Length: 477
Image (tube, rainbow, N blue to C red; front, side):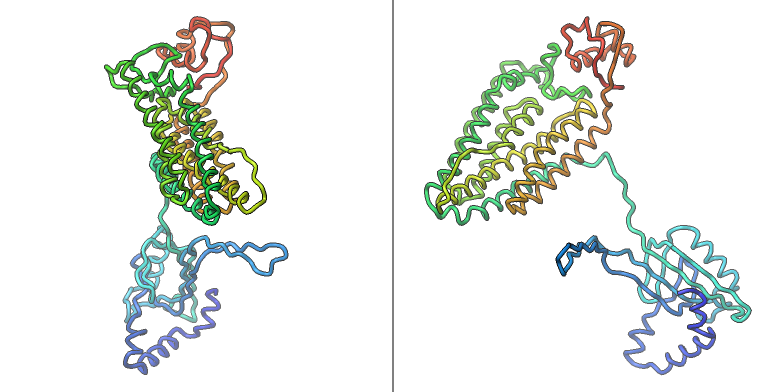
C-alpha cells in the first residue's frame, strides 16, 4: 500500500482522528479496556508517531516439493518467517497525544533513526520489539494536509548474527554423535530382529557366527606387526625416522609417554591392553548368544571396539583397524524357508550393529588423530566419509531410520572436525632441486630453519638423510 493509497483511504487526518475519538467514547466496559486500553504509543528509535493502520507478516518458511503423478505435495518446514511490520501513520505538529513539537523536526528525527541501523520499535499492539531494522520508509507532505505529514514504514526484526568459528569444540561433538550412533544402532537391531529371534536356536547361532567373524578381524588387527612395533613408539626421545611418537603429525603435536617411561613398561601396558581385548571378545560372543537382549549385545560390541582401539598406541593404527571392522560383511547363504529368511535377517542386523559400533569408535579415533598437513586431513576425511556413505546407504535401504540419522550426524561431525583442524595446517607442495642434497641444507633453503630437517626426513622417507631425492613433496610453509 503506497502513501497515495493511504491518503485516499484515510481522507482527512482530522476527520479520522475525530471519528476514532467518537468511537472510543461509545466504547465502555471490558471492550474498551481490552482494546483501546491496550494500545501503546508507537515510536521507532525513541521518535513517536501516530498510527492509522498496520499489516504484520508472520508464519513459517516452507519448501513445497511436488512430484510427478502425485496429487499431493510434501511441504518441508524450514523454520519461522522473520516478523515483518508495515505501519501507516502520520506526524502532527504539537500533538496533544504524544507532543513532538515541530512536524518538520519530527520528520528529521525519524529520517535520522531510520538511517542509523537497528533500533527499538514500539508497536501499538505488539509492544516493545528490540533489534529492529527499517527496510523502507516514506513520508508524504502536501498543502492539503498542512502541518500533518503522512508516513509509511516497513520494519523487520533481526536475528542473532553468527559466523563460522574455527575454535568450536568439534572433538566433543564427535563424542556426542558417537554415543547417539550406538543408541540408534541398538534400537534398529531390536526392531529388525524381533520376529526373527522367535524362530529358534539356528537364528541365535547366526548372530554368534557374525560376532565371531567380527572378533577374528579384531584379532588380526591386534596381531599386526606394525601395531606391535608402534606399541612402544610413544617412548620419549629421538630414535630415528622409523620410530617416532604414536601420533607423528608434522605439526609438532606428537604424543609421547612421560619422561622416564621404559620400553618394558610400554610392553607391559600393551600386554594388559591385549588381555582386556581378549576379555571383551569373550564377552561379545557371550552376548551374541542372547540376541534378544539388544542392549547387552550393543554394549558388548561397543566395549570390544573400545578395547581394540586401546591396544593401538598410534591413532592411525586405530583408524586403520576400526575401518576394517566398519567394512565387515559376513558371507553365508540361506534358504528361502521361514527359518532361512530369519537367519538371513539376523545376520544382516547383527552385522549392521557390529559395524556401527566400529563407526562409533572410529569417530572418536579421528578426534584424537593429528593430521600432518591440510592434504593429510582432506585425505583422511575422504576415506572415512566414503566408509560412512556406504553405511548410510545400507541403513537407508534397510529402513534403519535411527541409525541413518545418527550416521548422517557422524559424517557431518567428522567433516567439520577435519576441515576445522586441517584449515590451520600448511598444504603440501612439490619441491624440485637440481640434485641430491642433505636434509639439513634443504630445510634451510625451504624453511630458513635447519632444525626442521627431521621433519623433512619423516615426510620424504629417503634412503639416507644425506641424499634426499631431487623431487619430493613437503609442507609449503
